[in-house]
Image (cartoon, rainbow, N blue to C red; front, side, top):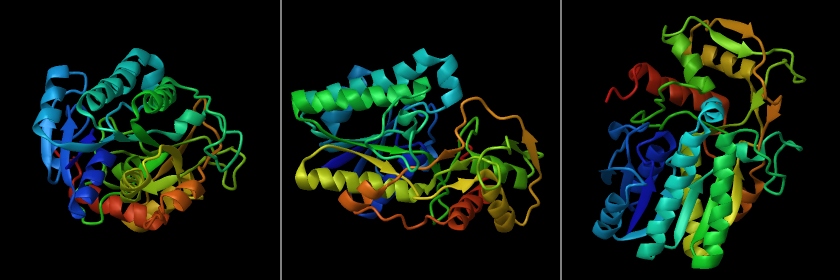
Length: 328
């Protein structure tokens, strides 16, 4: 039986597909290639189409014996979600409900949902626990939380078990260098820093250096993309094993400041990477770090590539070999 990975041509999705293939799983990838890249899918069966296309999704489930679903397909730019909330409800909520509708129709009862720590909004505690209040401060976080809530009711009504994984910043690239991060526009700190080292930007902007942190810059949680991929597979394994639902944070256990990230990138690339302090961005908390104790205990998740130098080195190896991304 196959694992259906929706959004499997995207950044985290493609790394999860690679990990699934490496352990001998049969994989079907569904992606509309709006953000993903066909070149990032290293195997399995790629079916190009939209989750909201009912006839297409019938074909996906009719042609393949699907055991479980891992759902990545979503828009994920916080700023854009504020000015285009309809787009985010369509792409993040409606699409996922259409997917669950087909799961119900074809008797598929397990889904791993790629959520976000943006469901918490402004955190009350650091590190953030799964039991902390979920009060999103933008439509992106709100749409992910809406899906989580829907999944709970689907589980009660239809017996569809789910695992929702909440995390902040995926980073790095596959250790083989075969796939990596390629967003357009790029909004993630590490690839933007590396664009400076590649000569594609003049400097890296630091949005505020007067935060109540050791060096005055914001602290964020970065997780290697392969560790994230492994967590999604471990979540699937747990549902196969004991047929229960759950929500888990995925984090590094400690955060890194913007200046720390830049300094390590300088060391890895050998480039001076000029920096420029700019005004704070509205709504940027000083520290965002999630506790992943529950995931480590219940999923047996142990991040393998969680030091910053490894994360940035793998990213650099990818970006210097693919300065324009996948070019597809």
